[in-house]
Amino acid sequence: MLAAVLTWAGLLAGAAGCTTDATGGVGLGGLGKRAPQEVIKVTPDDGSKGVDPEQPLLVRLTGGRLESVKVVKEQDAQETPVSGQISADGLRWEPDEHGLALAARYSVDVVALDGHGRRAARHTTFTTRVPEERFIGYVTPENRSTVGTGMIVSLEFNREIENRAAVERAVHVTARPPVEIRPHWFGKGRLDFRPKEYWKPGTQVTVSLKLRDVEGAPGVYGLQYKTFSFTVGRHQVSTVDAAKHTMDVRRDGELLATVPITAGAPKTTTYNGRMVVTEMLEVTRMNGATVGFTDDDGKGEYDIPDVPHAMRLTRSGTFLHGNYWADDVFGRENVSHGCVGLRDVKGGGSDTPAGWFFDRSLIGDVVEVVNSKDKKVAPDNGLGGWNMSWKAWKAGSAVK
Image (cartoon, rainbow, N blue to C red; front, top):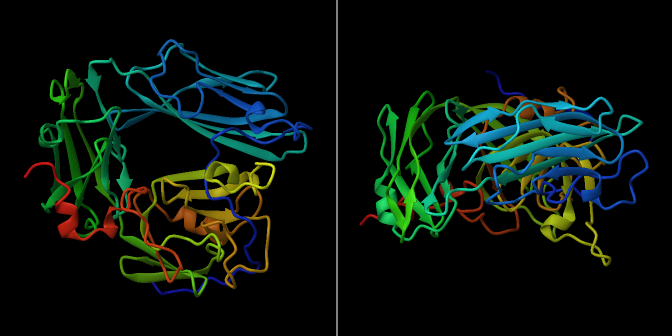
């Protein structure tokens, strides 16, 4: 494919949000003076752990109307949609079936409209109870998914693992065609696997969890005995040059496009290094207060209810996302709070730079930032393990 240079008119700027919301939506239908969590209410609360399976799952709106509610249950790397209904008045959503699954992780994505059709969004997650004498690992990526070549297999455990060697021996990651794959522990709660270099396109990866009855900590035994797999898709790496304010998008070695961007401002720079797309949201809310960007009154420096085409790059809140609320700096200067911004329109457009890139991206794609006046992203901040040398990576195994 011939390389192209994208030259859309209009420029991105402004106080770009750099984290998804942890408290709620913004005002709808004249409710702008209310606290964010009073507008879009999700039960159980965002970030809750050990939720009782009998606790109800409910989405409520104090004004306006629910446009969409998407709930997904993740269990043993298998994602299952949770069906439900929006009430006739548009203020309430409930699942079709009562009760939650044990040892599962749920994500809830809500989009609401006010009387003028303006959107606000909320993204929350919670996990349900695991029996006290058991442990499980929440697995990335999803079973039967197709991912980018930068995907790292990651297991996050619901409690600290004391006997890391025993747990490591009970997890097997293999590939076809064969390639050396090695583990690395981040503390006592996370175990990642990757090859020396990016996966080759077309690789079939199988993850086998033989954790059942393995003692991970005194008196605490594994619950899972599962096998799942995923496929590696095409190879896409995008290089963000913070000094030039551009992003080169390369697929299978060929330049698809050079896209103007804005990166972190001088006081809120963007991390350097290789980051992996771990989450893709059509629309989400971003509030500066969730990452410490607050004014003198303790309120977020920015609070954007409907950021389009948001792609998570780090756990700490670095996103590559669309921007519709400012202009005249796109491709010219860096003004964000640490995110990488691309021009977009309100509601998200398919023919904008952000929409174009979102539609051509996969979970597991790599975005590398260079020439930013910041440190390199930490290897455990998202799937940042590609920033470690192979020697250092292998040294993180508990099996000597």
